[in-house]
Length: 164
Image 1: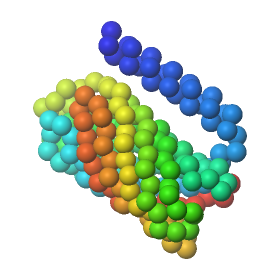
Image 2: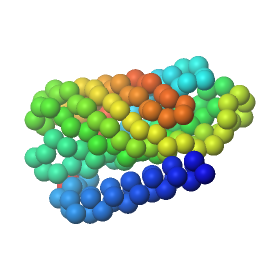
Image 3: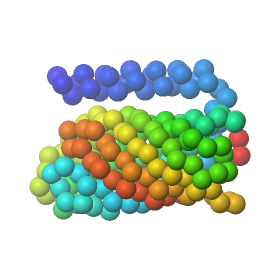
Image 4: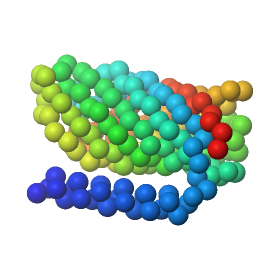
């Protein structure tokens, strides 16, 4: 019953996000990127994690929409984590800038060893620093996923621009 409520809540939240982003038609695809780092999930040792993301932004805005996914595997327990994040950067584009963000995620766990398989809804909280370059933007990020199997992580990554 609890998992059905969580799935229903995530479904309603995604519907609200789709409706909101449909109304905000000025957001366009501005980048595609990837990240790699380390994650320390509850109930497991630290693990290497990797992911990819798309980035949508409104022209001259500091708000970015970032759907993506993360994946890690440690001692037979793995997590595939599709997520939808929103972040705000404090300096104008083209400058080194700190940023803060939050989002929602689904966690799909599988287990070939210790740990429980299943799915879970989570909230993402993160912050970092962006470093612009001539043909890309690099970032260093700390992230916390609040879920039944909470996860703290540190990532480095790159976003390659796509015109909108």
